[in-house]
Structure formats: structure tokens, C-alpha cells
Length: 264
Image 1 (cartoon, rainbow, N blue to C red):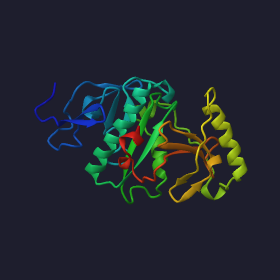
Image 2 (cartoon, helix red, strand yellow):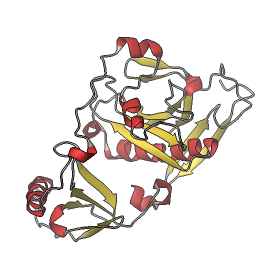
Image 3 (cartoon, rainbow, N blue to C red):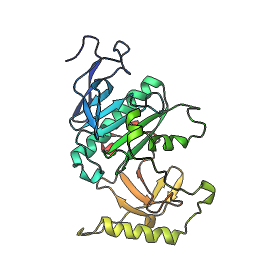
Image 4 (cartoon, rainbow, N blue to C red):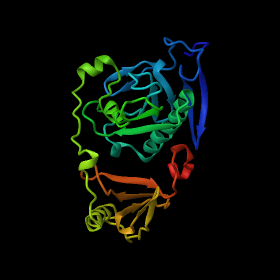
């Protein structure tokens, strides 16, 4: 049941209607207020007062051991561990919910940027989820520390003590990463292209791309969406083997600037 002070609003994005219940967005609501039902994140029961947004297939939680003010976590309602287990409808809904959550927390905390990180297949919390972290100047001594904080996050203090320890991925420092040759990158893209297009009746040509101010040769692009609005290409200096980039065709600095077609 909804208390009289509950902050409840409806948001519409595309064909999806969201229900918003949030202490973050309504100062009248109290921290102890309960809105709707408790929900599960892996084996952890999350109190309903932490629900920021709900949709048919996804939920956004706020106030769960936030690494910065406004940090929220978006997860499918169905407890799957890997992205390929989601239906197309669930996958689209997850990111639509993330965009709505991002708009809510950025507006509340006057943030002009965010980090979004999808945790897919982590042993630490075996429930697919995405972090939405609004960023402010000076919030971390070194900006990239936000990624370690997201990687080591747990929804409760008890969970942090009981979940498997976070294992940091060994990465080369920026100065240790070297530019790869165009031929090496073309070979990698060709291998991915063959896998992505296996069984296709026709092998569509991919065009060159511009990533911010950087030209990307056509032979380094290995996949284009059916709409032509998004592309995937190999990395000049990958952090690890298989690290690739996916961007919209159009140069767009912020997620909220994407059209619905581009976002989907």
C-alpha cells in the first residue's frame, strides 16, 4: 500500500510506462516509507523503499551502499546472470530504465555526466545489473577510481562481507598500452565479422566511421545494426583481448541526446 506521503509518478518512454517511487525525487517521503513490494537482487531481498523506478521487466534501486550520492543500480526483474539470457524485450527495457534512472539522478544531483557499467556474468553478484553513477567534479581523486568502486560494490554491508571477494582485472597502465598495426586490427575485425554474420545470406558491407574526431577505417568496423544507427569496431589500444567499442553512427556526447531509435 502507498502511504500518503509517497512520491509516485508515471513516466512514459516509447511504449513503456514506468512507475516512479523515490525519496530522491520527493523530499516529503521518509527513509522508512515502503512503496510496493520488496524485490530480489540475486539472493538479496531489497526493501521496497529503495525502488526508484519500476517497469514491466526492470527495476532501478537507489540508496544501496552508494559509491557517490545518486548512485543507482538497474536490474532485470527476472534473476538472470548473463545478458544473452534476456529476451529482446527485457534487454531494451533494461536500458530504457537505465536512461530514465540516469535522468532522474542527474537532475536531482545537478550532475552533467554519468558512468554506466553493465555487470554481466560476475561471480560476486550473479544477477545481471547496470550501475548508473552521476559524476561531479572532484568526486574521486582519480577519475578512473570510479570503475574500481563499481566493481567492488555490494548492495549491503552484510553482502559485502559474505559475497566472494572482488578480483581486480589485471590491466596495463595507459603508458604500457601500444598502438596496434592497422593490419592486426583488420584481421581481428574480420574474425568478429565472420562470427557475427555466420549463416547470413548476404554479407553487407560496412562503411568507415568517425568516432568523436577519430576516423575509423571500414576494415576495422565489424558490425552495423540493421538500422545503420550503431556500429561496432575494434580498439586501437584494447584494455584486454576482445575489448571492442560500440557507438552510434551519429556523434552524440550524451545518452539523453540519442533518439529513441538510436537508443534501442
